[in-house]
Image (cartoon, rainbow, N blue to C red):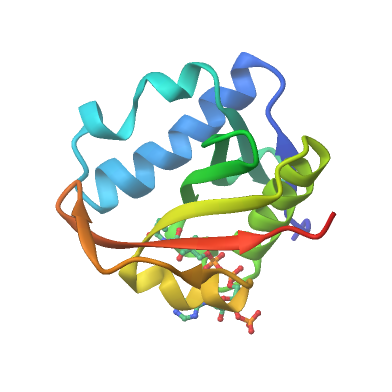
Length: 146
Ligand code: COA
């Protein structure tokens, strides 16, 4: 089996691949309404896609939050690929790109079940639990290495 690779989407086909992974994970598996899953930031955000060969198996997006801070959203790995390091690989690519673009820190709203995943990658919880799309979340932040 080919080792997964993560790319920054540069064309519409790759962006569609990111949306296909999100559709499978957030809309089909988690039951998030499509009208919430897709939003206006998809037009302007940076999209990352993890591929196993030609198959898209993971996705994430990055957008500006303020001048120093990037916001990571829609981090998803297909169920049959979880626990194999793909999420870690995606987040490493997001962090590299964010640092290269001058962001000092990253911020994200983690589904509480995923909090240990992000904590392992160096994110700290900075909020109480709140609901988004009917799912409990916490806000987490990480300072990037320059
Ligand atoms: N609880 C505790 N630890 C976890 C974890 C969890 N739910 N998920 C991953 N980890 C740990 C792994 O054990 C691994 O640790 P190790 O390197 O010491 O072995 C490390 O985090 C990296 O895990 P990785 O295999 O790269 O994670 P993944 O590819 O399974 O991706 C998610 C993690 C959260 C992206 C994936 O489970 C997912 O897509 N879930 C459904 C969608 C979702 O909820 N996304 C988060 C929205 S905020």
